[in-house]
Amino acid sequence: MEYSRPLVKILTFSTLYPNKNQPNNGIFVENRLRHLLKDTKIQAIVVAPVPWVPSFFKKSKSYGSFVSIPKVETRHNITIHHPRYLVIPKIGWYITPLFMYLATRNLIKQLHTKEKFDLIDAHYFYPDGVSAAALAQKLKLPFTITGRGTDLTLIPKYFLPRKMIEWASKKANALITVSRSLKDILIDLHINPDKIISLRNGIDLQTFYPLKTNNAAKVYSLPTHKKIILSVGHLVENKGNEFTIRALGSLPHDFHLVLAGSGPEETKLKKIIHDLHLNDRVTFLGQVPHHDLIKLYNAADCLILASSREGWPNVLLEAIACGCPVVSTRVNGTPEIILKPEAGILIDDRKPESIAKGILELFKNLPSRAETSSYAKDFTWKETSLGQEKIFKKICKEHKEKRS
Image (cartoon, rainbow, N blue to C red; front, side):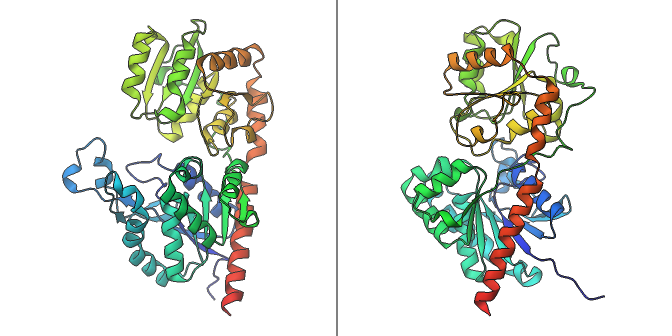
């Protein structure tokens, strides 16, 4: 039988990708790729670089998980390579694109010789997209970069990274953003609007949906006669957990806050909770496996997202698909998700009084869980997958014609 080659074979390149030791890292990139492969004839391999960490750090809480990440692994029938790149604290951020390029160029050259991929599909503009631009030039291949959030909302505020992002953007065959607001940021960087396409993330309705029975309250020791406000994400400043905790203090005592996530602000947040005498009204769950979040969304009465910046926050659609309405700050991609009352409400700032007012407003006119979960049906992955396929096919066709 004659070998039939896929229409397009891509190499997905990103540090934001799950691995054996960090199964939640960049899961949104993996989900996007999985649905692309499921919905189209595209094939892919993944190169997901990880920082090089000496073996004597293997017991370190901060760095130990990097030591034993396998060089090659398979997830969902996708082969993932994890080359190691050097990271130098403090000053290293500015030269990480170079170190990442040097650490991956031989591997990617070997993979291209063997796999004959047509295009490099990079996710996150800096440092990943900058390194991918150099790799694509080395191999004389077309490439795309997908902007996902802080790579465009935060990093371009720094001069050198911004200049490198601008360089990579101008070299790219196409730029993809997960929200229209991120596209506007690229335009503000003087990138040609004609090469920028906005393709939102989707929601897998077979992963997130209303449960008929749910044991989350028992498993996570949640109060059963309280209004559960859920926050999912890293415990970092820009997520606004401090303001949510302070808002809780002004809400009636039948409201209970559940924080699912870990991060550097945990100690600070626990002190605030203690100082405000809210210990019995807040539950810390730590890091929760992504596949278990369905139970929490189904147990919660609302999700709170008090971020100062977001690209396309997947937690909003995950919660909505489970019938859990949301209260979110109006930042970047969030207004593109919360379009109707059954999805939830937007607040204009993350002051504690604004958060409290938003939560009370939601509960005053709380939509049914059926109405909320039904809203998510307009956000499946199919449209995004077909949009990516169209872009990749067009780029590869133009590249082939240019070289012939």
